[in-house]
Amino acid sequence: MKLALKIMFVIFIVWMITGAYLINTQHEKAQVVMGLGVLYLSFIFMPLFIYYRYKDGKYKKYIINDEKLKEAFKNVGKD
Image 1 (cartoon, rainbow, N blue to C red):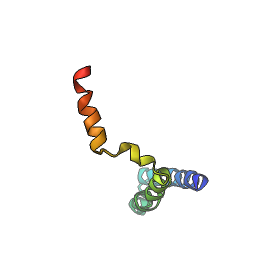
Image 2 (image 1 turned 30 degrees about the vertical axis):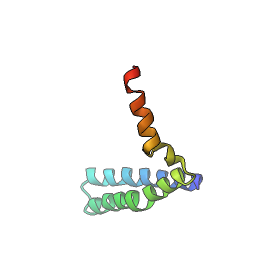
Image 3 (image 1 turned 90 degrees about the vertical axis):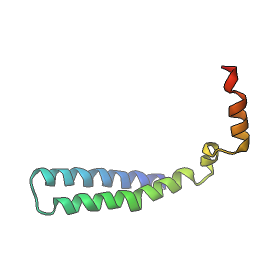
Image 4 (image 1 turned 60 degrees about the vertical axis):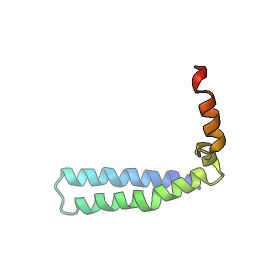
């Protein structure tokens, strides 16, 4: 999965560079190429990246629960 994400990222970068070149040369399909690149990023690449990154429960340390709130408020006056 990690290799697939790297390949997909390289494809996205090449796609955006191609789109930027087409915009600079005033090609009629430049906006379509850039739009498809953004759709690729937002609906294919990013969901797969987020799933890969947080599939093992690594996100749990970022969730605020009652214990973390109590600990944070207990440590407020100590600084």
